[in-house]
Amino acid sequence: MDSNKWKGKFCIEVSPIPNILVIFGASGDLAHRKLIPALFSLFTKNLLHQKSKVIGCARSQMSDSEFKNKVEESLLKYIPNLDKSKLVEFLDKLNYISGQYNEAKTYNALLSKIEELEAKINTETGRIFYLSTPPTIYFTIVKQLGLSKLTDENEEGVPWRNVVLEKPFGRDLKTAKELDSQLRSVLNERQIYRIDHYLGKETVQNILMLRFANIMFEPIWNNKYIDNVQIMVGESVGIGNRAGYYDSYGHLRDMFQNHILQMLALVAMEPPTSFESNHIRNEKVKVLEAIKPFPINELDKHIVRGQYEKGEVDGEKVDGYLDENNIPEDSMTESFVAGKFLIDNWRWKGVPFYMRSGKRMKERLTEIKITFKKVPYSIFNPIQAEDLSPNILTLNVQPDEGLALSIQAKQPGPKLCMGDLTMDFKYNEIFGGDKPEAYERLLLDTMLADQTLFIRSDFIDLSWGLFTPVLEAWEKGNHPLYKYKAGSWGPKEACKLLVQDGFCWCDCN
Ligand SMILES: NC(=O)c1ccc[n+]([C@@H]2O[C@H](COP(=O)([O-])OP(=O)(O)OC[C@H]3O[C@@H](n4cnc5c(N)ncnc54)[C@H](OP(=O)(O)O)[C@@H]3O)[C@@H](O)[C@H]2O)c1
Image 1 (cartoon, rainbow, N blue to C red):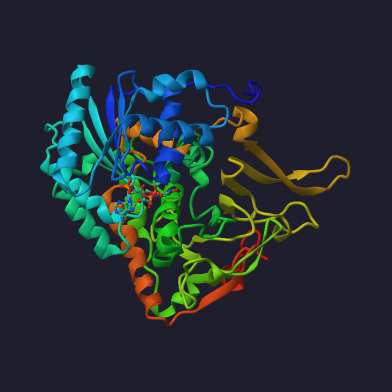
Image 2 (cartoon, rainbow, N blue to C red):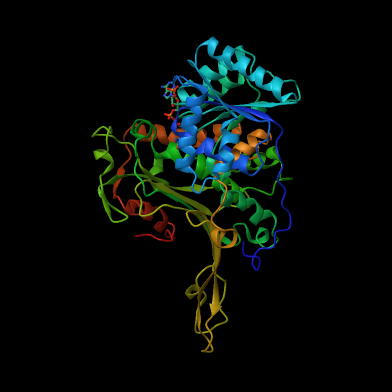
């Protein structure tokens, strides 16, 4: 840690009570690549209570020791420089139950195991049920959890019985509402933890600190001083082995309904009353309520979709979307979306928020750029106000997490010599490369029953309410699907979206 640049003053981390964490789909990719490594990391930081236990549950037949072996392999594979001295103690926490997700006997076996473990723990114990399975079986599992009374809790919700759900949460407004009403027939909203792993990223969490722990941003964080906001989530990868899911889902659902709207809400929200879960989530919901619906009769001026063709990424030739395995040759699924969002409220009226995200883009890059207005008048004759670049605040979410502010500054020497100067801070340079994974924060919060970084059902409804008319219009087939070359920043029509307003993407090609 660079102590010249960082003087840590307040550092509050709460350790959870003992919890029993049940992972459904424990044989799967997410469990082995992200969840169990994150639990191991919490364990090594003493943030997993000594008495906490983990139960893997899935259809695959495995004994406890086979499951432990599989977990050990995954930890060695996914955690660089793993502290092997902690491995035995961690593996000792693991148990495994195999069974069908729709059969009562699976849940009876689970209940007996949980009761056996709780009796040994012998103190108040939380229960977390993490659904790391395809969403099609979420309700099958939750229904059985309810029938077997595994999720019953007292009125105060202590000790808690929480259920964690992975995205996607529905595929439009109707299906999201159906799923929600099914879940709510068994669980209270306070028991439902809908994951958006972007909210677990350090840089995304830092948006609140930046905005509300510094006096200098808030007075200029509005339409008087901000010209436009751009949010970009570029992925250089293609669809990998997720063709089935991706082709039936598309990029608008995969990225915009969740990650991008979450980032937009954090940038645009009013100051919450406190750093308390519902205070923050209330303000985020108000932002969504104020977003102007996309005008369907002139949709293409507001939202553009694209699909990649073959090209070159990182010096390697790559296939086009339609040539990927298991993609129908006439697929109209979008792998890129750019959109202009308008927020109708006092703070943001007239400030466009441009969002852009795609697969097979030039590089992997997630960033938020806040471009301020130019100075109204230049005293530096003959340099005119319009010659001076605007200040731009860039929040780098990945891969080089940090933030940068560009300002106008004088070059030493000549009397009048100005240019753009970037002041930047990179997490890696100050804190080293060892940042916690998003899933660590999120798993820890489920064990603390803190819902701040999880999505409330009204946010889900509003987000689908915004995008469902767009998806329906696209499905009718009257809107263009523009092609773009793999390894570019998307179709040129996405640039026109801004050019028509007198702006451009900060990197338009
Ligand atoms: N992997 C990621 O990086 C990632 C990222 C974001 C979100 N997610 C979400 O996280 C969840 C888990 O992802 P994953 O990649 O781990 O999924 P996965 O490997 O496809 O499935 C997890 C486990 O669920 C069981 N399963 C698979 N298909 C099933 C079916 N049709 N019916 C019943 N059980 C089935 C399998 O276990 P058994 O056969 O042993 O029961 C499988 O090991 C999904 O909702 C996914 O959308 C994943």
